[in-house]
Length: 180
Image (cartoon, rainbow, N blue to C red; front, side):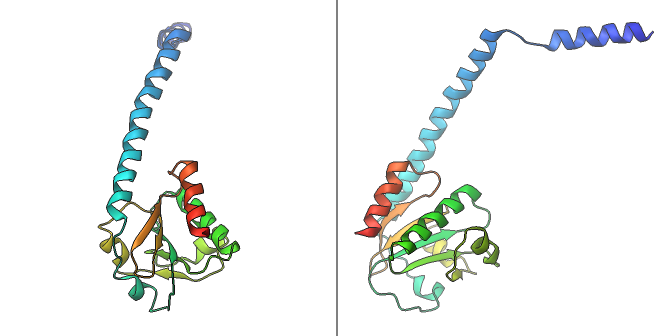
């Protein structure tokens, strides 16, 4: 009886096995072909959001920053606790680089009620502003976050970066823009 069960199980396992190398390669090619249009689609969505945001005024910024006086341009990292962890990490990394280059007026804004763990995790020593009412994202029509924004003195968006998903060239251009 055990022998019959063993034979049946062996036949089932053997019949489920697909050791055709050609089939595996065809499956991998199909997966890659499906991923490429998805990536292009997301890049197109991010580009449309950038165009939508450029020149837009964030009227709630002074409320969220507790009326902190800001002179000149400012750089904002806006994120949510549910955002992609690697993307948030990249955003903090860029803000930390800008701070190390003495770029004035860099701010981190979140809707997360307790941002202290993010400060520790991403080694960010400055204050993180909590946007309890999600005013910034309301002003921006709930744009994808995390997002890095450069604002001029009139609180209008001059440059946009989606950290973690933007091509390396975009990150370089963003840093160059902030450092000029």
